[in-house]
Image (cartoon, rainbow, N blue to C red; front, side, top):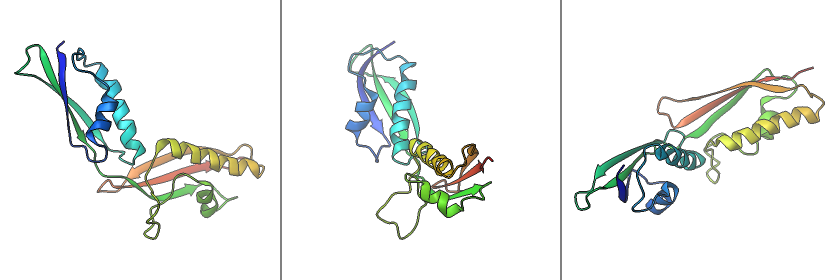
Length: 173
């Protein structure tokens, strides 16, 4: 394995280069092991997903540094993709609570609305998990202790900048 001479970052606009380098967390002179790239990729993808970039793609390229024999330049190439907004959240299997009640229980995820210019409708997996628990809490507080979310589906529009979420609910007995 070659040793790292420097890191170049390409394609980033949501995060500055210093932030990316902090997440890469490699130092000059360190051996470049391809297996460490998976952990770095995961950290970068997670950071982008938290900002609503669900389709980010990260590639690592290494090339020998002509000015330093035995040393390589690591290039982190980022394709951020579009910022994904939640366009709609729908439900099936619900009769006790209407769609508005269920959406109202969701504190973290909201649909994109033209008049909500001050808030974000970005999708975040952790926030979605919290909202799923909040929906179940609404049922449980109303005596539906067996209620559960049987499944959820997520898909994108053609331009892949809007996400649609559907949740299938079993209200129990």
